[in-house]
Every structure is written in C-alpha cells, then in structure tokens.
Image (tube, rainbow, N blue to C red):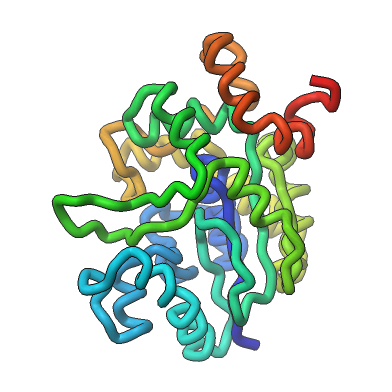
Length: 272
C-alpha cells in the first residue's frame, strides 16, 4: 500500500534520533550510519526531490508558489512508490493527501531553546525569539540557493497545535522525555502505528545502536550532513538541562510565549 507516514516535530525535538532508531530496526543492523538515511525517505523540504516530483525548478517559483506546489509533490511521491514512504518534516501539519499516519515528537520548549541555539549558532535569546515567531518560514536566503527549501515551521506552539488538531489520519504523539527514559518502550509503541510488526530483539538492537554517545562519536569521526553550523549536531540531549542554563528572564519569556501549550502537554502545572 502506497502512502506517506510522517516523522514530524519542531526542530531539535529528537526527530533525527527517531529516524536512526527506525533505520536500525528496519534494516536489522546493529550499526547505523548517520549519513545514510536517504533511502529511508526524503525530507519534505528537499529542493532536489521537489524539483523532480513536480518537473519545475523551485528557483523559478515564489515562496507562495513553492508552498502551494507541495501537496502535488507529495501526491506524486506517493503514487510513484508501491510501498509506504517515511518522511521527515518540521513543517506545520496539513490535511495532506495520501497520508497514512504520523508520529509527532514533542519536547519541553525550554530544552528546545538550548538545543536550537547551539544548532543554528545563535544566542539563546535569538532561539527563543525564533520559537515565538508566528508563521515562521525557514531555510530562506537572499544570497544563494540552499539544498533545503523553505518550510512553514510556525512558532513552537503553532507547530505543536497543528499536529494535535483533528486530522483525517492518526497522529501518535511521543515525548522526547519518554524516549530518553525508555527508548525501547517508545519504539515498540510506535512501530505498529507505522505499519511494522514488533520484534523485541530487534528493538533492543536498535536502541543499543543509537545511543547518543554512539551517535556523537560517529559525528566526531565522520561529520554529519544535517549539521548546519560549526557546532556538532548531536549534543548532550539532556532532559531539563534548561534548569541550570536559562536565566529567569529567558524561562519567563518561553513560558509567556507558550504557556497554554506547555500546560496542555504537562510541561507546566495547570495552575502555573
């Protein structure tokens, strides 16, 4: 059965780690290659794939035209593949045709801010501002073409809300914190959502193959194609690392920007 399964998240919420877990499980390998995820599906904002699917050069289109063409590109991808595709996205959700289901990863936005700042090589304040910007579009440059096309990230709250809203396909929500606490249980729970049988032995192999320590060591040796700045892509991956890194003012700003969604997800108490 053809169609698309989405592996979705706001950036720096564990999406790459999840894709590597699935790569190890699907391929039955005890060793994963962090630079060899292409055959497991393409990213929604790949310029090359976009051009191939619609037969037009994205460089000839406006931002609005690119966004308008995306549903057609996705439809053609699904029609051209007999087996389901597993596609990464950081975009806000839409009622995309041919979608079979989705896994959406959430992470405490206070920890996201730390990881995002490091990823884009900007200040924490700049990352917080980016996360709070409604209708945010990313991967744009006035000076040169980039391999990634723009994506409609929205703000952190907008992004999460879009994936929690009712959709004509099932969405399985997973927290980064639960992945860190028990990756085997999380992987076992989402495999049926993505159409896979659960093999406990293979789950354990995948978890052992994709520890953050292993991924950091491989990046240190070989680099990582998805890194966008001078800093390493795979960081410490701490849960509640914000407690000793963010200033009170930074915490207050994030909670002011995203309080309702943080309460909804349990990152803030209901009476906060």
